[in-house]
Image (tube, rainbow, N blue to C red; front, side, top):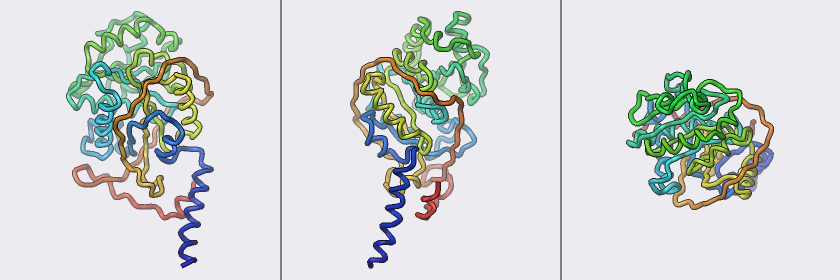
Length: 320
């Protein structure tokens, strides 16, 4: 009996020690224990050969997770006047473009007229997923070389339009400060039911903070096994300093097996309340660049079969 008890306790102790030494986030609980910024939802891995999961694989489990996210948005963001959604992250590679694209997609599928804006003027890419061009976009409009009607592109999907970033300008931060940006967002409020803005990482570049002046709610993306634990403390610090207003967190690239049986999976909370002020402040020197690594194996019932998920032996979880 004692041997069996030790056999159970030793691996648990090793796992707990390993978790304490690991610098990247492992589960949702680690976020909620550090910050009062609420977690809106959890999105799993994506092993599809496209970022347009909701549109091209609507019966997949990950698409259902985005639909649950859409449901939670009704509690986080009640009222018809809350229609401008800004999506950002701490550093590149956390999946904010993937999240913003599929949030816009799931809103469009629900019959809401939605426009997705690529506001990462330094690294324009969102147009590629839809097979559209980047010849004319936000950068052209902000310098007065294009009008509103010239930068909006229609996608092949009902209720979903796109405004690409446009050619890379020499002064992106200054363009965001332009009065034309605020005027465009106000006009889009009247033309669309939802405006989803994909921005650069906010701890790298000041642009996202500037754009938060015109958003109703801000979604902060964190990626499991990628986002550093200290980033959660930075987010809480920004909340306390009034730099993040009306914000919530979306956990991306979540692998169920990583939680070591904590039982998280896809859990969603309702009825969050918040109301933070706004301010400026940023500055963390991380490298800039984009990368995605999705892989998912989880499926059941109505959803597309994405393959069985094998549980790792406990000793394999000890390996980095």
